[in-house]
Image (cartoon, rainbow, N blue to C red; front, side):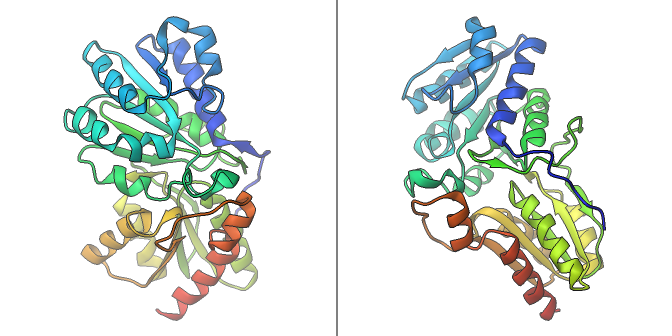
Length: 317
């Protein structure tokens, strides 16, 4: 069994900041807009090095989306930055009408997603953003797993023509993917070969899936682990290829089970090769205030929960 090494915990939002800084130097068409959260989104370096291409919009997220859409008409590639809650729910109409409907080349970059926002509580812990964004026609939806992958994704979406929702988080998490990886939009990453159960994960639950696979391996159970960083377009073939080997699947995400990765995977299976599936996700609920670790434990979004779901889904084969 291959062992993945945590090279040192880093926050994925800093991966976005590093990627944006690199883009600032390499692509003169990249512009950045922020809704009064420069430090939280790690946009400081871009602002410092390219002040003429940085726009502080203030606490006016809907206005920010409209400005970004307009900038694309002149050939600019706008990256908007604010919390996931404010990047989606608060401005959904503006995104739908001004960006998605017109297929504008806007990169909606969203930090502090999910429960791991922590102590700020339920009003800021958006758990429905993936569903909101994946339902928009033409919208690409990406949810990265660590610092390195977030940086690589930030660079990749600048080359993609069309609207993108890039989702990342606040806390420091395991950094284990290749520093010089090639990020391919819509192409899953097969991490571990296994024969007994497929574990498909997204975001920082990919590391939890690897930890779960190690625990299962000690019990004589072989897990096939797939990193789904792009939720739309989904890599259907990677999912079906894995499930054809294992005969069952667990999906893991820091999101509501309604509208998230799990539902997208269930659609693929229902249309092509129905197999038993278990969902690691929040169960139609809002979050609450607490440390990220406390919340992940309470809401069943960790390696232990993935192990239990794997054993359950194997029994259903």
